[in-house]
Image (cartoon, rainbow, N blue to C red; front, side, top):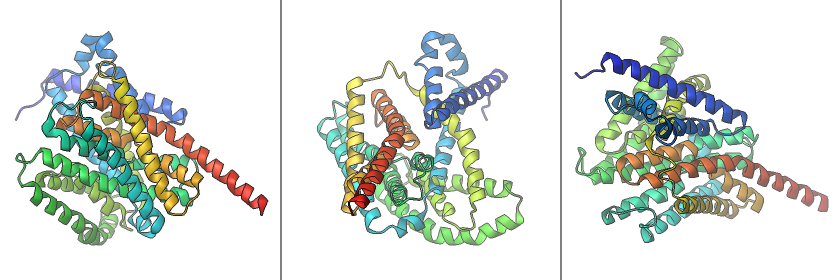
Length: 421
């Protein structure tokens, strides 16, 4: 079995230390500015990557990020990190909340998925050259990807914004969270199918069989899987040490679920996400246990992953202003119009509808993960990846202030109505 030599072990340890420290320092700086921590973590990667350090001190850059076994080790770690991040995102999906929201949530969910998807698909289909697509055979896959990229929201970022603005328990907050949950489940399922279309012929099964097994996996995990988890979790909580028992077993089952979907031709992230939904929905998986898993993943794996995003490409060399502005335009337009119209059809005021649209427009971590997977799969090029990262950061930064603005406007309108009556 090949192994790291002495110098590579030292190199790997120094690199991980640098990534963690820089991500934490810049993340905390942005947290104090009331911005998502992920922005600082990605900025740390851009500073350490080929964009800045690679240009100013190329020898230092090559020392920390050599193209040898160290790079392979970092790549393997980031793949595990993505799986665990999607697992944590799944834990935050509350199926009972989604089910309890009837007409309004249905309108918002469908509208906030279909309208952005349609805008992204049509733009990519009719103007593939503008987006840098050179292979005509990849036009369908790329068009599907852009539609999905504009449809997915960032559930963890949205939840944090609603908590910070004291809107999580309001009707608008509950509807935003419910719609974001549905968006994420559908979006990650469709994206996993798109990845399987690329890998057809390289996996173990034909794509149609893969789809059948995927549907079976989802149904089984959310029915039989939930039943089994509800039976074994009380035993785990009683018999094993806390938090070690629940932490190690939940991560182990997450990786098994990820391995299964990877085996059948659907990306490992989907298996982890659906397992997270099933586990998080169990009444025996306590908030305390969920918080421990959350902190374990988000304070170790997440910073390392998001810092490495900046190592992928040169953000100055591959920055395309017209492409970035257009991606920003259609991303804002699709999600705000889609979510806003759905809320309006559901009977909400225009101010509330706008708040829902801007709340759902936060992309953050999920969009960046989506872009990285698409880059690795060859669906998009470096310029499109840079545009997607900038779009994800911009929408995350804008969501909170705009959401608060329209909710404040809604309160003023309500106050005026009461005075008139």
